[in-house]
Amino acid sequence: MSDRKSTPGTGAAPPAPGTRTGAPALPREALEIAAGYAFPGPALDLGALLWDGACLPDAQIRVPLSMLNRHGLVAGATGTGKTKTLQLIAEQLSAQGVPVFLADVKGDLSGIAAPGQQNDKVRSRAAEVHQRWTGTGFPAEFLALGGIGHGVPVRATITSFGPVLLSKVLQLNRTQEQSLGLIFHYADTKGLELVDLKDLRAVVAFLTSEEGRTELKDIGGLSTATAGVILRSLTAFEAEGMGDFFGEPEFDTAELLRTAPDRRGLVSVLELSAVQDRPRLFSTFLMWLLADLFHDLPEVGDADRPKLVFFFDEAHLLFDEASKAFLEAITRTVRLIRSKGVGVFFVTQTPKDVPAEVLGQLGNRVQHALRAFTPDDQKALGATVKTFPDSPYDLEELLTGLGTGEAVVTVLSEKGAPTPVAATRLRAPESLMGPIAAEELDRAVTASALHERYAQAVDRESAYERLQEPRGGKGPDETNGERRPGKGPDEIAGEPRRGKGPDEITGAGGRGTSSRGKAEKDESVVEQVVGSGMFKSLARSVGTQIGREITRSLFGTARRRR
Image 1: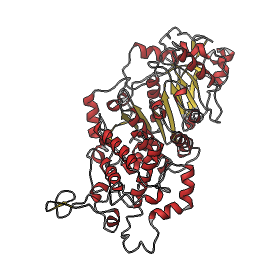
Image 2: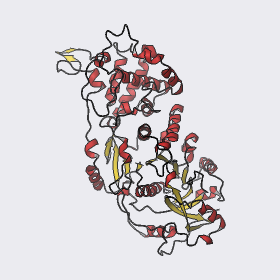
Image 3: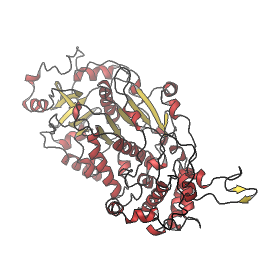
């Protein structure tokens, strides 16, 4: 069926949400579709059914609250209303006590904290879909990667970020990624904390020095050429101003799970507009947030509502040029994090931007209009149509004719079965559809309880300082005008550690015993690791994750102490 814009409503007072005063008069096909969305339990109201060019407000399209941890996709061409759909869903989740995370790539989602402004368009849309619209602001926390932009700084330590995600950011190849995993493993076993980029550089430099190059000999070593590539990549990365994203205090992802005093879910808005020219970085950082949540949250099974719904905007950037192992790790994380009570919505232009293995994990779908101006567009349109269940609509015609704020919807029912495909005129968000003023945003950030905790960067003693430890109070490695080498890891391992922080990761080599005097009677750490069945098994199954075999997740991210 084709879809054309219907005549605006009369503006009469709408019935209460869910009331179906005229439902028996609906066409038979529309009644069948509407019946698929008549859920008895708590649900989010998306909008009203579109059928044969008319908006049918008595046929409300909804998504069960309990199914929002089954993940979803919001797709559509630029300018079709994807951002407003995110805002609409986030508002209703917050109102029902569910925390929300929003990646704000364009910088226009901060308005969720302020009441919306009524105008003719809003009044018309509300009347068309029988929405009782009231301008409402929602509790929000504003975050910014590394503090670049308006928001509480979000940082990660290098140890926590792990070798797999860092390899993607640095654009390393498979061999270089494996070598980086070996470096992380060495740092873990020697108790060398990798807090920021200079720590990682110091460990790489040590392992290629005269003193350190034999340390990894028994498990393949680190070639000078590979080390050079890694060091150059780190230098270029830092020269682009990206060093601010790594360090302490590290952001605790448990902050995303909070509710406001009025029991509404907190909406955490991560501003990415200031770093949108660094897409590989921010998309990988979003994956770090998910990975950290994944291995810190307990299993909850099928709950009546999610613990958190995570909106992953510009999702195609995560998958571009991703290795097979990386895609496999994403797929496993998406599949398993559902049982932790976390729902993930990928936001992108077409479903083909998301690999089939991930797409198969997504149970809820809001598809905005697609454009078909080129042969490639036509091909993408045809591929998108094939991803929907059978439908009485002519989906190729419908998807190219949808207006702004209209979408094709299919979700999972409370029993976990797909609902009928429903062309939908979506409701209007009740919060401000646009950014709040920069001054107001800055005031909100400063007043946040998180500001004092995360605003000021801390540079405590870590791998760099311990490998380059000064002697006699002089500059690094310098005493009385003479250059002296810094202490090696085995010397460091025998010394008490200073400046421990709450998120310290304890390595096997940091337990207070020097390797001197033990070499003749104990196997080296490397020999123990290589000889273990666990190492051999993981080397086959994970490949790139060399170190932290037990305490690192699928992405090599380290488990923090809460």
